[in-house]
Length: 216
Image (cartoon, rainbow, N blue to C red; front, side):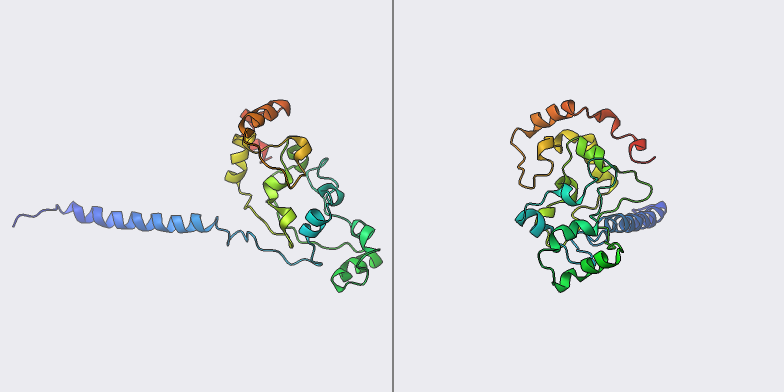
């Protein structure tokens, strides 16, 4: 019987198996690096005191800026000082064991060491104030914070995720008066509204994908 495959077919078959193996490993490594598990998405971090955004925002109606005082004027949104918490808790829930760290901080003057839920890497420059000024809502990046009994990270906040907005800002921005509104509903005509807001807020879309915007 004549030989069907040439001797080189053995080399090609072995090479194809090796390449397939490398591709599989790459898929596992790259895919596994962006899973909710590896980024600890929707996992609430332990905090010195259990703080519920749902209670304070959705139920009591406290504005984001009451606690995050520098979000409109600096890169850092700001973590509330103990005095901010004590404005209310010197009058209500004054003996709650859950608020013992707050009372101790007030008595000693030592700040409460909250654990950061969302934190950009050191090689990434991020400025909260410019995003607020251009119509990006807190809820666009941080998810439904007003529904969180304990705060967790909703999105991985990776580069491709950020670039999706930088390349198509009209799909994500809101009117500035709706930035802090957790009940805001995206209107059906948002495509046209988004284009109008891009022009109104002076968003230079063609430059937002440049490397220097985030890596300085």
